[in-house]
Image (cartoon, rainbow, N blue to C red):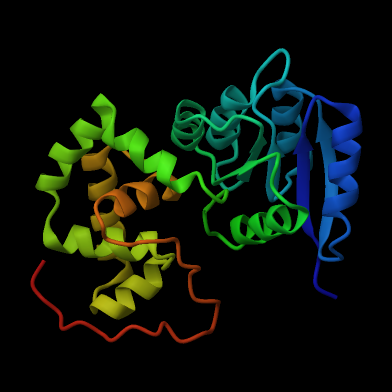
Length: 239
């Protein structure tokens, strides 16, 4: 029997939290292993129960969602975090992504969108709620951070830009290595270098930046395990 995917819920409203539990567990592949009503409890939940993903509200007492995301990513980096919030402004969206969130869903989303977002983030992809991708891009264009990133863009090598594009399209390091005829170690080095140059540290923010630069027009789900990569191999070049 395939084990269920372990999910934690951090939400300070009791009724909403109970509703989310029922919704999540309506998928027979999902199991809610813990609940938290503030950021501090969310951190303890992750440390003690080790959920694969935390569905995280941002506005909570004691410690808010932003602080909880940062601490969870520091303590248990492999934990996926999907933000579920009422906040639509670019300030909240960008801060959540910079804090380490792997996805961002608005509370006015449909049930089917939330379930799709959970599946996407659990599979290793990022997810941005319908309609906010444009806000994220505008945020980069309209801030000093965006201007600094533009300067950094000019310092990226062509190989780094190729890898950035494939990251934004959802490809894993091993798939990128196969497509570009590189070793996985070389891909990881390029990936690390471009993240340092851009000062971007998670897939969601890299995807938004790639969209801003026109490398991709929308998020593409990565190939499934064991599936063909589906891109022609590119002749090897000297690094």
